[in-house]
Image 1: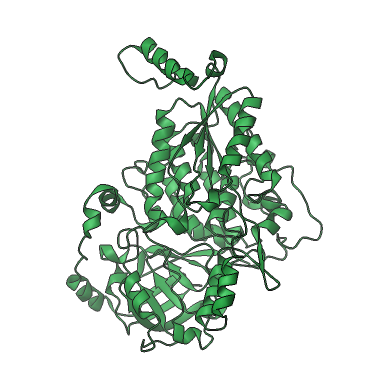
Image 2: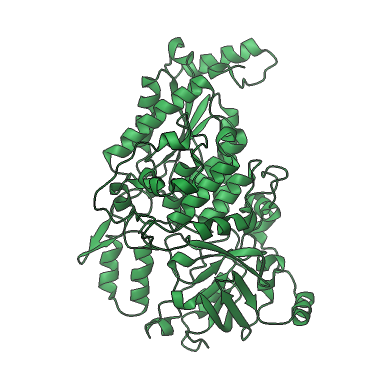
Length: 569
């Protein structure tokens, strides 16, 4: 099989001429024959002025290139889509599949023997791994790393759990406008991903558990010298993979590896987005994940990491406590240690060296967990026939079994327009319901599931209520919030049929979410339901492709034509 510059030649009907032409053009960049005869390591460039989570990517690229060249291979950098959660309209999730397609096709198109996937902000690493899984060339993940903690009035701050907490205080008129503006300057003190166990950190930790990144890659802060050294080591390993043709993603992404990742997701009290993204990655392989697997693993996996939003600390402290390799020592009996690892051996071999920090309290022992069960649960019921998720680790214990009156918002715009209306008929015992915020309905399934507490209740000191929607929620958010209700309202799912005044029952112990109306009434409402009109913007281009082919949340919201045949759960 051809490798290096000789692979994937552009077709001109003459193979020798194709190589001749390729070499002629690349020599215009000043490369020598010696350089061009070596195995090629592709390096994704996801830097963007709109992406502060990736602000250190240029430095990481240089370190990766150094590692590649020290190992005798040739590094070649190529750009792909770059997405940042706060700068992508309508939502970064809308563009995740586009980035996955871009990454897959660039890996296929370019003459690379292995590839380093540099990503950080929430949807980027999932998109990259989805693409790499389908292209199936040797690949290794390099997270950009979390930001440092900030400080304000004597307390530590980290985006974006504290963004939400402080904004809640401001909405409740317990914080001044001057203070919220000053805090705004302290919440993101450096480049890097959110400094809590949000989606970005969740995904980075899961990559270590999957065996797709080097040990310690998840937690080292973006600005530390260790982050640069890990980048160099990643480049070196990518060069070895290019020379030895492996392992490929298909060698690593096994059923055992996915279960390891779910153990990690539950043990860190990770983001609900981890369910959507891991399911999408698995859907690109022959090992799809049934939604119940997340719940089954969660029942036997305790939360051991004391990080916001489930606990108190930040990723910087998790790193200082030993990070994922140290955490895995507490989880060994739950992990498949013989699973293959991108480092070349097994997961067990990759984590045999770890730092045991005396007196640290961030990583709890199994004998003293933060929570006795995993952070996430899967719910079903007549409101969610195909499932929904709840982050019980960040929810109020007194709301785990709750029945209340539905207060319904028909869209994100409707919720935004009415949530702070003093005339809104709502009490703290009610259940806030938002619909048409799913994959198709929004579009893009925005992180709007963190429905704010109505302002008049916030001013009374109410800090949590049961909230349900077909939207997602940021991994940095907290509260008793049922998400990813599937099928979504925009497709005629049961959520579309709920009316203000209906009674809704949440029973986390029984894993149920139900609207308390009988089947006859539900059938009557279903017959009367009409699909919302297709927006003009969704009648062309990528938006039309997205609307026509996006899967539901329980399948990972990938495009149906990209998922591996037979992978539908």
